[in-house]
Image (cartoon, rainbow, N blue to C red; front, top):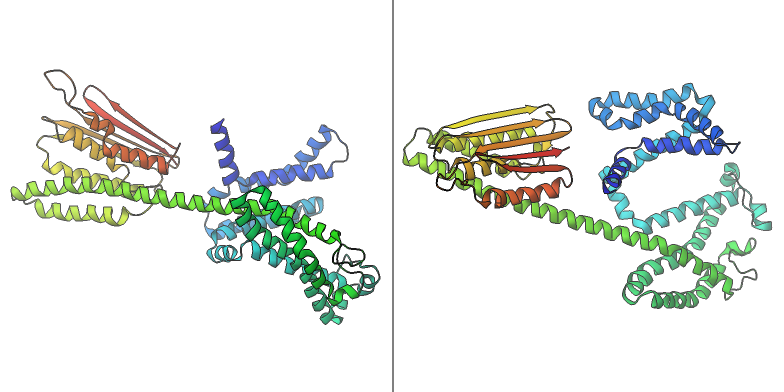
Length: 488
């Protein structure tokens, strides 16, 4: 059940064609005149066929965006959403206009989330700013409608359904005055929303519970609604026609005024609570992300010293022997340390870079071995753009040297196979181990299976690829094999 839930969540979060399939369903229901499954399915099949190019484009959008050049991708998008609909527009004009509107909405949503200036602007605007902006827009829109039919408004407070821009231009100052006064009406309701959100919910409800919250809400209401209503009644718009308050007699103390404001506060409560929950969730996610990054950084720091100590030991041994290889080893060590210091702090590196680092590491480690090492390294990279966290696979190679190859008393072997596709990374590392001739037990202690290096590796995998990796450790009579598969 959990796997099914994850698959559904992954699909909804990474694909968009379901939106247009739902559009075909909704449009079919809207067209339905005969309440029968046969009629409904007939309409759905027709509408789905009309939307088929759009559905296919959205289904393969991510792959097209990667494989196509930007200009070619834009041409494909323009053909699917503009050119193709125009060829069959007469048959399903409203359907294609809705599809285009949905696509533009998806583009806008992506821009709001990923285009940094828009993202920063929306974050700064916040819920309060968004409500104010909407109230301003609504006030001007209502002002346009009223100005389009001023006699009707004066006689019965009726509002025109369409805008007459000629009349608005002729009575422009009146339009501005009416819009600002209507905004004052909306702002009265906003005052109670603001008090509800920032004081009653954040302070009273959070600290003293539901009972005290509702008592405080009623107290604020009965204290303020006569005052707010009186102030609004002073505006000139109330003398043009009927006053814009619930009370029929324009009585600021009438409970009908308070009842409407009470409704505003109650209806805004779910929105406020949802917003608060969303903000706290974002904060928790951010804290968790920072915690994970800190932990990953610490795990990397635990890995690097082991590598450095081993390499310095190699260099020390060569210097004692006055080997001509010492200068080359210093340069090789510098390259490896440059990778650890500079590339190691990156979140991801190309798999080819990690493979090159492993090969150089093996070459450097092999210098000080006292016995012959049969080395077999196979690297097959089908996807050159595949990436992996740095210094991840090297842990298994370090483990092989530390617990198998370096302690061997005779010839040994190391087999490494790295296979990389667009779907997974498969890494196997098999090294030889020896028997104790006396009790025929392997010279393999628990450090091989439960050492700090493997614990760090497992922790990093859980943080980076939870439920998307398989790490298998297989000790046998004369070898130890580690197999790691990461699903991309």
